[in-house]
Image (cartoon, rainbow, N blue to C red; front, side):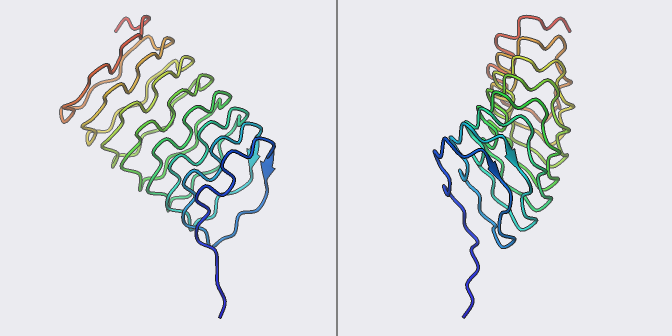
Length: 181
């Protein structure tokens, strides 16, 4: 019988000398924490369209400057790019995503937020510590939790419109010293 790998969970966790990845098997569905802590990783060519879980996939990849394309099949992205301090541009976010908890937390070089899909409802700490973020994204009407969402985003000058469904906003704009509107 033929067996196909579907799980790359923790596969390269902590491989600090890994600089690039050129081919990921097309059968992979789970990439949770796959490249977590790969501090020299600068490039990942393509994420297979079969992938559904990218939670913490690139967490702590401090040399990653550009995110790979996120397939439309991805449903989980919690902490996906957390601590990617060299990431300057966010990828397009899959419309299947509902939870963006800590997705870009600590991405200090990120200047523009991605469009947040209409189905997202949880955004705690999503952009926390993104000190170069100059404009907040439009917050979809389905979002209900924005706890610490923009905490420490010192380059923001304007807060986004807050949807009426939001019931948690503790520390949402804490430390955003340049917000004037």
